[in-house]
Image (cartoon, rainbow, N blue to C red):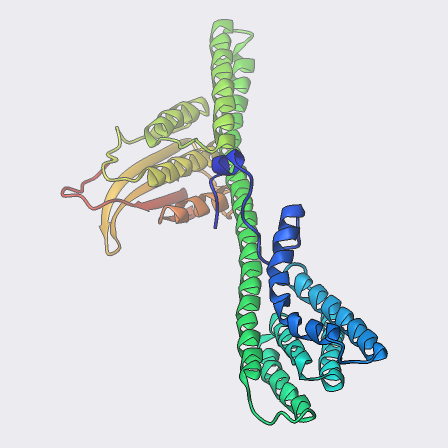
Length: 397
């Protein structure tokens, strides 16, 4: 269960966390009171001690035994509801209760039989379910056997209470363990979300900087070649470099904040600039028809176009690149297909590196697919995303 952070900041925390160690005085008091309520069953042994029925030695021994019993019980149950003991420690403490409860009842009288209630509760709270299913009825049987020493031969309400309260504590123990598991699962989900966010940022930075830095490098080389004979054209290239650099800075900032969703039309315009600067003849579609295309799917195609063009500029050595956008009707429903094909060698693009791997993940999130492979005269990348059904589905090229 989560809570609005604003509401949490407006008032103090009022919940007691189950299955966690005590943090703060308030939690200590609440948990202590919750456990102390069940000490009401000690009324019978205490009245027996103060009633003058026993010798001084018997009363002292009974008081000492009761003190140890209560101390062990509180320690065991209190820790089990927060940070549990190791199994060996639990077995030692339970063994202490198992010895004291029948010993005190056998030596001092049936008024002490209520100690078996605490023995049953401790078994239900600390033992695994399979063992608790045997230990709780076993506590009632042991209570009955000790009662035979005092002439009690019937199954009374006290024995029934031992069984019922013990199994009720099993339910509480299961609740505590489930809460602990849910808390661990929530921490795991938070960690996975953080990892996914880091992966998203890595993909965005790779795609953004790879494209922008490639364009800056190309224009810088052009400006260097133009500078001696055509300083005016070199100045124009330097101006373009400044504009690309500023846009790259804006894109990186938006990617870090998680708000950037590239648009396909913008990427097509950027593709024209990048291919022209690299001396690659570009064949691009007109204004794309994006009716029925979800925003996430359009964003994935825009990233695919950017990655494909970056590979063409940086690795392929191509002098021609064709980009096509086509609507298709498939068995899975209408799809929008982006195809980028060049006539280069495809060097560096034959395998799925960081860029294509990240691109595959983007498309899968949008319900799409990616194909990238060498063809007879170059390299071809095809990205497909689903499109909402429409009355008239045609070509977007």
